[in-house]
Amino acid sequence: QPQLQESGPGLVKPSETLSLTCTVSGGSVTSQNYYWGWIRQPPGKGLESIGNVFYGGTTYYSASLKSRVTISVDKSQNQLSLKLRSVTAADTAVYYCARHWRASPRSHFDYWGQGVLVTVSS
Amino acid sequence: EIVLTQSPGTLSLSPGESATLSCRASQTVGAGYLAWYQQKPGQAPRLLIYDASIRAAGVPDRFSGGGSRTDFTLTINRLEGEDVAVYYCQQYDTSPGTFGRGTKVDIK
Image 1 (cartoon, rainbow over the protein chains, first blue to last red):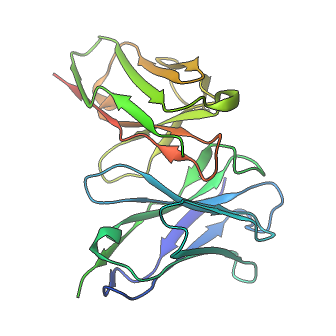
Image 2: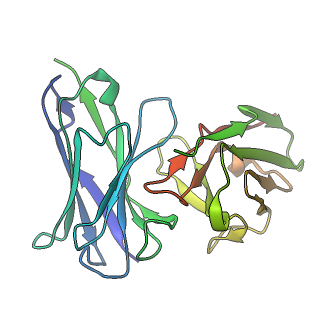
């Protein structure tokens, strides 16, 4: 079974870009069998979908974040990437990467990373 | 965007009782593309139910899901201490999917 591990800076300044990676082991992000997603959870609050990506580059983004977010696949590193621009304190959250069950964004998440806390503060 | 409303916000029950959690969608969730996740403090969500009623591998049969279109339920029978968690529903009919705000289940 695959293991997913998020990584990146734990502290980002307001107006800067939040950049995270998700390293996948025991599986390939270039597999034609799965979509991959990013989800976030502000402290003490619920889950929010950010977007998802297929190995060929097809992406779907949350309407509320679409203007600021880019999700991509790094085939050489077997990683997913999340970039969120112009961050504010409202972007402080635990960020999770997860695997969709099949090669469709219309599927549930079956494997999740442990999450990484990113705080936006000067 | 499909908005999911979960109720109640908190459920406090005694061991052995049954819990019924509700998830109502603002519009029809096609093909029953709805999942339930369990999240314990400090942990990532864990998949319990997908496609509205299919139990994920390793999930005890005390957990069951049902419903269609706009009204879905998660039932937990014979409540145990290990079931203390927040439960989220998620629709994945539209991409990238949306989550409800969660129902917290406590044990008295």
